[in-house]
Length: 361
Image 1 (cartoon, rainbow, N blue to C red):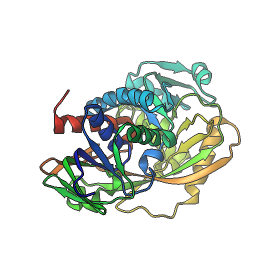
Image 2 (spheres, rainbow, N blue to C red):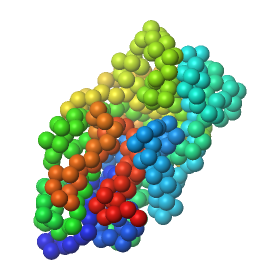
Image 3 (tube, helix red, strand yellow):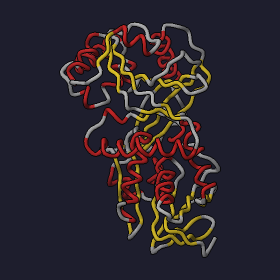
Image 4 (cartoon, rainbow, N blue to C red):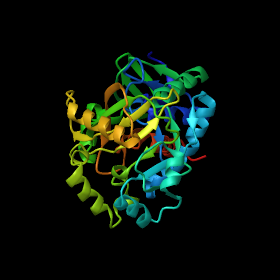
């Protein structure tokens, strides 16, 4: 590999790395992607595929808006399924409906309108966010990688990055000459840049998730526990009442830090999740009580028995701030989304990094 020369070397083939490659390639730059695995198996395929543009503010909203446009472009060019589904937030208790009303959200729905959109039981109302998108996470990133490879982006699979400086990316298969290098390795930032990980407070967040038989859900669906995770809802006066009810009636939602959320893949299977546990390292041993609770909540949500098809553990980078952007040397960058919104903001973050390195267009 010695002697290969590129404008941009990207380390990591998750959604941020692939977006960096796609945006740079569209500018006519020569790009190489270095990935230590033989396939994409990380955070970018272990999620809901939900692109929730409409529930954010500030810097997050800026990246989310750019991401929205990029997903539309990627889907058209790479040929994968993208649903312009919107997002349904379901209130199943009066205190959850109060949170929605107090947030000032537009698009408030009655109980009957919720039932018309999704096969949930016990809804008292909700809100619909029409601009949100959905992809199948198990298909989308793989399709983007295949499209980029066919379009002239070089991929070096099964190749570990060892460091970069002075226009050279050092790898386990030799040196790559690159004018700029971006490390987008997700939760494994500490493997190459421990000081940066410590400075930004990066840890790993482990998730328990299920794949269950489908229910005919046409739209990504969030619940009261989801609202407690988004500031537009969690800052309302009624949020305390919702949390107190969970503590009294369903304490596992809080102890497992559950975002009770559902999306359905094009093949009709239902993605169910998810728990959250944060540490510098994630235990490989998953708690069956968490899976039992996720299963029970889903059955209660849709009012019918549901067979479990798969169980798995997701992992993503987590830190006190939403994004990590560091410049350890010259034209070397280290970037990550350090909350669980990589699919919603990762491509937009990547676009801003390309602007930083090569100028805005």
